Image 1 (cartoon, rainbow, N blue to C red):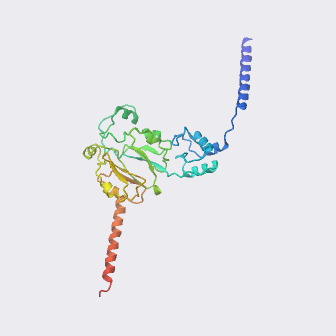
Image 2: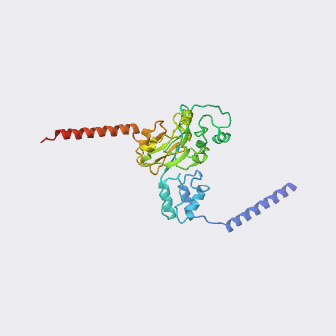
Image 3: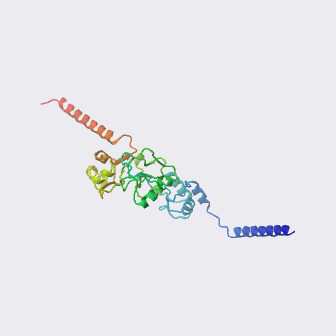
Length: 301
């Protein structure tokens, strides 16, 4: 009898609680803007935080209540999705250049030999906390793949041959999660460039030339040849390290050709810088020969 009474009492409490919850939910129900769900459908759902909000739902709410989309951009959604979001919320779309992550390091296993063994947790942050990596370069990639783990779009993987993270520009959304995670801050978000063409310095070593060369065979030595070669003043050297300003760079790649260490990399071009220079030189010679032959064929007085 006591068991039955307990069941009845507990059942009654359960029914009463359900009734109270139902009444409260109806009394304090707040109808959500229907546009929020439509906006959220266009977002990647990675909750990466690259938009500056706490997640995709928070970003969708901000878009639905905003007076302007000037400070609301989701890198992972892409330009077309942002235009559709602008149409949904009835605001002007924000123009933004697509970004892609680039690695300021090319200290591969061949270029930067391993000097010590690390037997602890596979974490770049842990290695950085200890104050040293496994190679002589104190500025380069630590190689544990924290950036790969941070990427929610499958745009990065560790290359077993080079020992460096490899970035797929077609999958990279420019969310910046990898850049935020890297403890040495050697990943930068740069403009994807016209047709995916871009030029950058694949090095972060700030040591003087002789020291840098001992630490990595392809390190920037701060010689300044790239600065002199650039006709657009896009290259500067600070603390023995060259940097290319993407806003000024016209993609002529003269810096790539003159760099004695091969520290300046390019991507997305249909032809290598050397082949392009050779083609330009061949065309120049052909033009000179044609001009000379035309001059010789003209009748002399």
